[in-house]
Image (cartoon, rainbow, N blue to C red; front, top):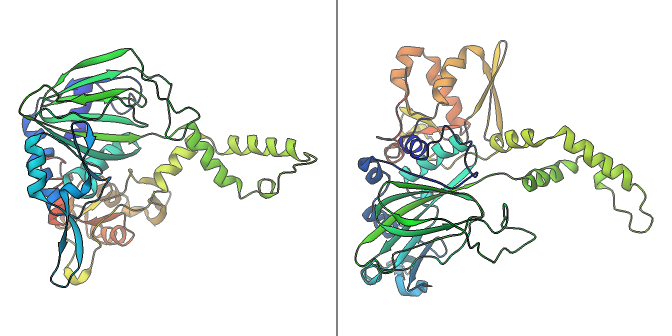
Length: 398
């Protein structure tokens, strides 16, 4: 999948692929103003907030360094039948933003097609799960105090300015579940300055950082933070623990009094680790995820027109003589080898207009597309989902 934002991030950071992700702090610029406004604007963010029922902690506001109680900006919208749904009170939200506040919306990719497709493109690029949080700060409001994240982040400043400080880690590769709470910030400042529209930063896991508009006067700042959670050695060991249940040795009770069988248990653990190494774990992690959220295909709405792959990671296509396997989303499909050209097209991550594809590649494209949609590997490209691709992801090449 070729996505403009992913390519722009790579160029800005001087990267060739995702190999540098999580290694060192990096920064650069995206000199494409149209791309920034295409990704998200402050008004579009407020429109998303207005049209959905949102709850804390997915939607939060901070003012003067403290979180605003949800009762201040959330009210119950009561239907004529007395049904109550919490909604953002846009009048109160507007007052808070005029005074100076920070609005945070987590996982905007769940609500917005543009963010959904951007996260999917980053997942195909990084081979890790990605979510995006949005931060809108107005006037001279403060942001979060100095803190660290348990995942790598790529930050893109979309509008306005904000002052940042990034420090080194005080513990190597800290984790959410860890043996050390890691409360003491590092004193070594790696970078400090003001970010402006188009600035991009990569902050690896564990690096302390903070951002604020304190003393900045009137104005705003809008940035998106793509959180990328990479697998660790602990993730691999947890996966091995699940596999261990297949073997009787690991299902037996531990002998508390005599310690018999301890050597055999250690040997079995070493054997299991050797048989199912980290690379197999990473491959399984990609291919065993559940299907992505999508609008289901219903033939009562009409025939398939345009489809797109919605797998969290690039599907694996394996050829076996007269057949070809598709491995993705916890499934393995086996088709005749003549379906290979259609599969490569339909699983490219690009939107595929079936009429155009059929004219070039034959009728099997439509047949294969119907199978992939039925198996929830591809989905119909609705007008709403299409908006997430338009101008950002190139169409399929025939």
